[in-house]
Figure 1 (cartoon, rainbow over the protein chains, first blue to last red):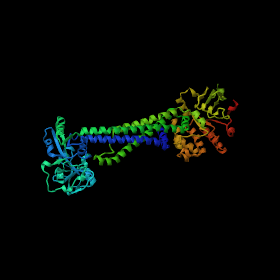
Figure 2 (figure 1 turned 135 degrees about the vertical axis):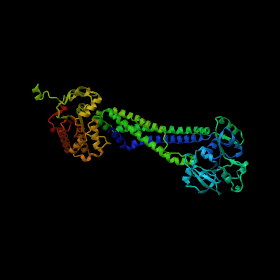
Figure 3 (figure 1 turned 45 degrees about the vertical axis):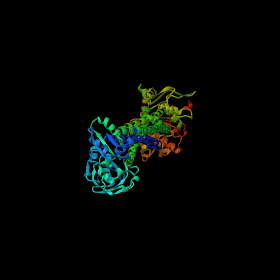
Figure 4 (figure 1 turned 180 degrees about the vertical axis):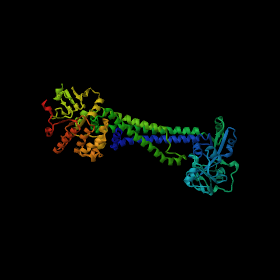
Length: 416
Length: 222
């Protein structure tokens, strides 16, 4: 009965109780949203960063090199000659060195020239349907690419020059889907993979232009394409080589060797990502502080709401006392009102946070090539739920004391 | 001893007061001693400022007297702890006020049920029976705020009775009512309290009901 009374007191004052709950809910929503985004970003970034020990690419920004070649969300610094990184394939400290070559895309999905080890060793990927690429211009597509673009085995398409904004299609080089990968929940789901030979076949002139600058794709002159010309061994280029070590000593020797070379730069994903997250962290902390500020206001609002409610209900409360309700019962009923406001605010905040995460996930998936999800939960949410309820109840203490101190005789005398 | 009992000299009283008084600033108000039998009815009259409501609040354990004591069922109301007194009031005493107040967020039935809940005596058939008696059964699930003043007053009388208390204290229950409603309310109060063997004490300045109660105290005389 006491629960019913507290609940009815909340819902019969929808405006004032609602305002407090909405304020609480908003702050919880912002906290949850920031927490979920950061959690998934950190986990996906670290997870992928840890898959590769060193990215060897052209000189430029290390972070850009990692973002482009590991996370596939930025442009390449440029290309490197394959012969310059030849030593990596033979080095005793290197477990695997997987070359990748970027340049084209199909409907915003990057086409990566590489070998099968990229799929099987780095991402533990497997073929769901069809086969790995065996011939030039055959592709294996990620599960999301297949689902989103409705591509199936045997389908053909033309790659567009450029990574995000294409300037033209390579209409002379149709790619054919040879296989579809099983879903992994990782970047590979969003990629189109083909052999290095395919990329070299589509872009045989790159050696003539030096670095293959994808940002200035308009400079790309299609007349350079010579479909019959094979790229000579000396002029073969790749965008990067993804290196994994087989010895802890490699960490201290390989980056040094790479960086000594005039045209090469080594970037360690784990370090770059840590620095990136360290850069983002203060901005996220500002959001947390702001949401805590809203949280504070909502608590103040609960106090004011309940105090006003007490003012309106002083005759009711007096009547309850007259009817035998102990001060303890009155106190508990008001604390319960704080409990319900806290409960409504926190649960709706959690639901809102996850729902907005779900909406945002669609955009984030496109932007970062990762599967962000609304259904990721953090144990801190449970702490947040209990903390909000506790704080709602704490905020109700002041009004409860006011009700506790109510002089029944005086109150009724003024009214009767 | 037996003879004294038979003629009522030694009869056990439900309410007994001894030299109670209250003080408002410089003003001391002394009240006459009250002795009221089980099932008895009493009208306490007095003009405004004579201390009627204060006396009723003292008898109901809502206001501590400056001096004296109040025995209800041989229990000294003000020697109890606040918690015990609240509980005692819930179990033994029902109140009816000039302006009936209810828990606005609850329905008629829930208001009556909450009264029983506070004294741990939840008894839905009793509520239904009393609602039928005052012909308000059809408003059982209505919001209390949708009731007319007269309906509210009848519900407040039922509320005072749902716990089957020993005493009902009514503070100016008729002052705001027209003649017809006034007599209906008094009849309802007297009949229901008689049927339930409940002692009834009404304080009022409303002279229209003076003739209804042979047992009267006029505070203006003290």
